[in-house]
Amino acid sequence: MRTDKDAAQARLWLIIEERAPASGDRLPSERVLKDLVGCSRETLRGALAALEARGEIWRHVGQGTFRGRAPLGRPVKDTLLLEATTPADLMDARRLLEPQVATAAALRRAPEDIALLRQRVANGRAARNRAECERADDAFHQSIAQVARNPLLIALLRHFSSARCRAVWQREWDRTYRRVGVEEFTRVHGDHHEQVVDAIAAGDGPAAHRAMAHHLEAVSIEMGVLNPVQSY
Image 1 (cartoon, one colour):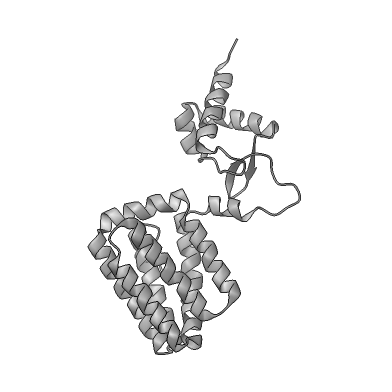
Image 2 (cartoon, helix red, strand yellow):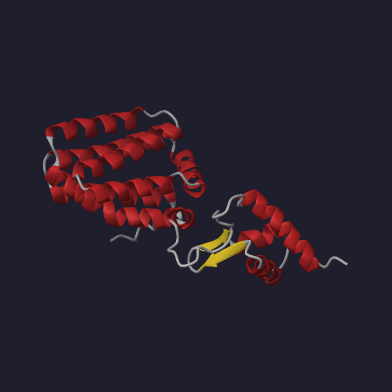
């Protein structure tokens, strides 16, 4: 005879097949899964424990639950870290790192770099939909790292770019874009980017740091991942 626990486990597996189809995919949170399965938190945890015992899922404290067997004796893969990255985590990391990258770019820029950065700003101002805005903004920030001429910084900014491709970031970006509006979005971000480039062109590291910090703080507030009274 099939029990409620068996039924919950069967429903949970169907949800996993839909929401986390590949090994390494991250499952929704327990709160979300509980509502999707339609069971108590206790029943859900029992079903998750049964799947974990069979090697169907594994858990990592602070990162979540993932499909497949846990990687034995190896660090968590970058792809899993990206899956576990929230928009708030990403913006926090960017606010810590990118102002320093802008400072380095101001000290190491070459004349041809400024022309590239000016073009990146122009591309952002010319964007006419959410996808174009996202691509132009990403290209601008990666170009700052290239001007800083440090391979590790370039790799880190590319890593941030990969996180921006995740569905959770795209959903938040889309909500922000719709709330702010395309004209306001491109105008404000274009002005911020231009202020960063002006400081880099002048070789003014502290000004570049301030301009980038101001820009990323404004983006964080727009996305709702930073309270206006919070700052570094």
